[in-house]
Length: 99
Image (cartoon, rainbow, N blue to C red; front, side, top):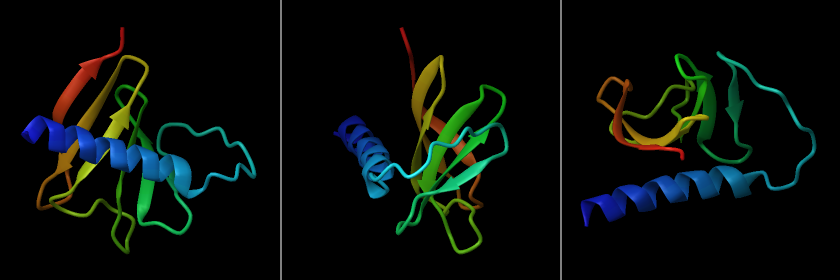
């Protein structure tokens, strides 16, 4: 049941990020260190090292991750679910390699 809930939470985050700004006004190229805010939501995505992975999460007023929430991460080699601790630092909960 726990794995189902974690998977469901990841799917909700990704679907919200994908559909929230569904009207494609402009395509942007993002790189390591860039942050993208999804319009009319509290979801943002950032590109981080070391795997050039994109992490999407619920953000607070300052743009950081809300403590004790989950986020989704995607890179060329894997996809996963992260949990942000009480200080807003991510920890990988589930990691699945891309075939």
